[in-house]
Picture 1 (cartoon, one colour):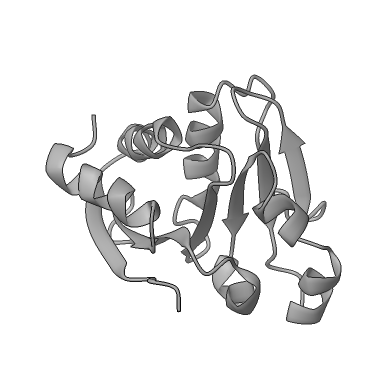
Picture 2 (spheres, helix red, strand yellow):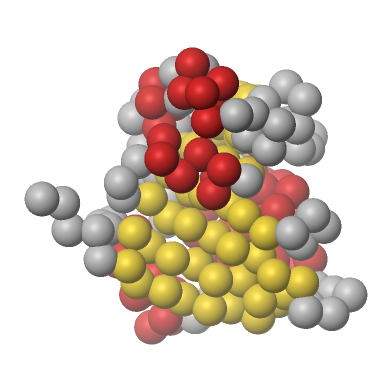
Length: 161
């Protein structure tokens, strides 16, 4: 039986720069095989988070939402696999062979991951972005299992810098 205890860190962002600080802290803790699910309403900042995350991984290419291409691959300190599964059914997502990405050498960032929750690895980081005001967001970071719980505990202890 896997120990998938959840550890939660809540962050309040007042600007895209604040969101990038969080993305940078998470990118700095990422290693090969890191899987991050990213959810929230349209316009909540998922793509802005992804762009900041990619910058902190050393990606030099322009990063935008892979809505119609489903998966975009970028080279940085680690390979980044940026996915948008919004337009996929669970069966279509399953047929893409996402496990090869999830358990590969790169970092996976999956926008709209709740739509494929059954396919996500049992241990991963889940980020939910909620719009409060025009620029204000409440971002809930949930570490499901280890090492993701440790990442959240580090954010709780040290904050975002």
